[in-house]
Amino acid sequence: MNYIIREIRREEIPLLEDFLYEAIFIPSWYKGELPRNIIFNDRKLYNTIKNFGSEPHDYCLVADVDNKVVGAVWSRITEQYGHIDDETPSLAISLYKNYRNLGIGSKLLDLMLKHLKSLEYKRVSLGVNKENFHALHVYEKVGFEIIGDGDNETEWLMVYNFSS
Image (cartoon, rainbow, N blue to C red; front, side):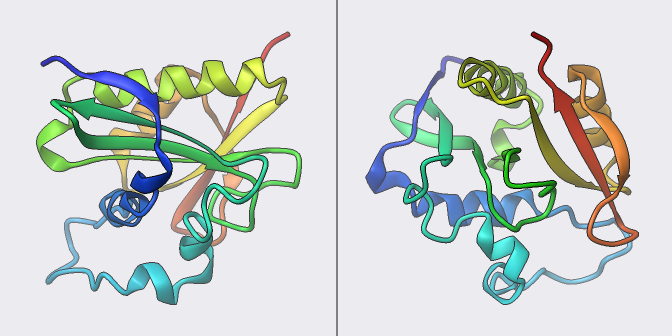
């Protein structure tokens, strides 16, 4: 599949709402559909996209297939899931279902890590649901390490340290 990775365009920022919803891990035991308004009702979740692009630490790369954005990785420093401190950006990454397991997400993640390193951040963090074994494996394979529980007992807090 041919795709390009590029910076998000200002007019595409509203798509982050879709990608945030897609990023929510739904355990196999959960029955029914997750209400979309969870994005707005959970303050830490909403902070992931709220006024994105308005802060100096907001960065986003998207995957583009035939002029359609199919995935995104974004980082910012705000009170969201995966937040450690005001020096460390937190990541979120998501792809539409039909574009998963094709290597696009790995490429998005790799390029974002390179970008954040070039900006001289010391580390980057993220939160991952403890039942999301696939994502956990992907993050560990890249070099993220679990440093403890996240906001609650269902989330791991993970960090990727940039070597100098």
